Length: 114
Image (cartoon, rainbow, N blue to C red; front, side, top):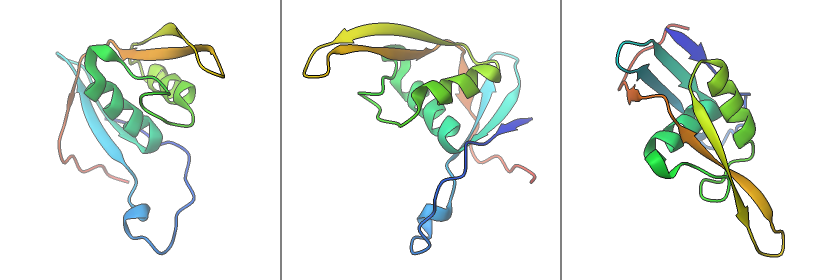
């Protein structure tokens, strides 16, 4: 099993739930590896899975470093396509839409040895 973690975030000591890191384990289908993700890469993978063919953008799924999350996931072998789309408004420009092209299945409740 492969495991990856994002950078450690500042934790508010007054909140017990803030101490729990987001984690997700996925299996690459049909016969691939089981990969355990933690932190922002895990969060990004969950967003990509939930978005399906629509994909994710920093506008529809706000996150401070989408390019970093997809970079880390791509390093693990996940195929994530970036499509660029123009947007208007006072800060007109273009933004990426990220599409997960690797077929994965979420593996529930997998214990990972430290």
